[in-house]
Length: 72
Image 1 (spheres, helix red, strand yellow):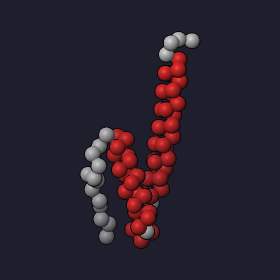
Image 2: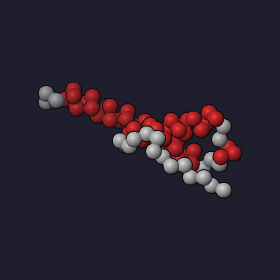
Image 3: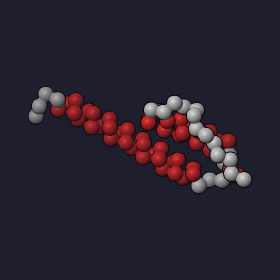
């Protein structure tokens, strides 16, 4: 064992937790991608916006710079 053992173990645990959150976020966004506008209620739309903002935070992009594409 070395003197960094506790720090290494704690960092590995925090990274694992972080990766778990990223995986859940990716799954939520992937599932949302298939929804049509008719299928989105206000609560679902708010959740999507929050997930997009969380993703922006995770990858270091500024919030609110997402372009909405309008489909006919």
